[in-house]
Length: 71
Image (cartoon, rainbow, N blue to C red; front, side, top):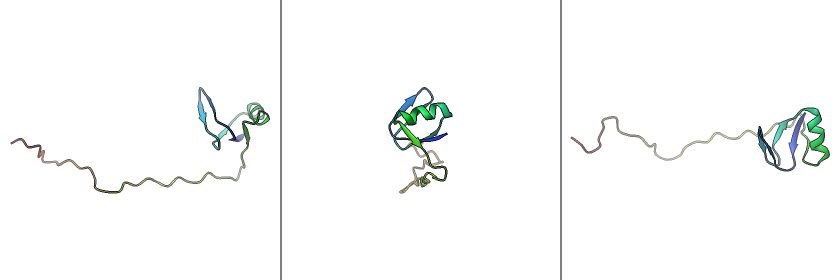
C-alpha cells in the first residue's frame, strides 16, 4: 500500500520525512495509519518533477597543452 508520511520515520532500509511517499505491506501500512504516522497516498497523485539543475557561469577547464609554468 502506498503511504504518505505525516511524520518522520527511519529504519534500516529507509529514512522518510513528512510528505514522503513509500510502499509498505498492508499489515505494516495499517499499523502506521492507526498510529497517525502516515495516511493513504492518492493513487492518481503524481509527485512534482524536480527540474534538472543547470550550471551557470564559466566552465572550469584545464588546458590540454600543460601550461603549468614549466618549460
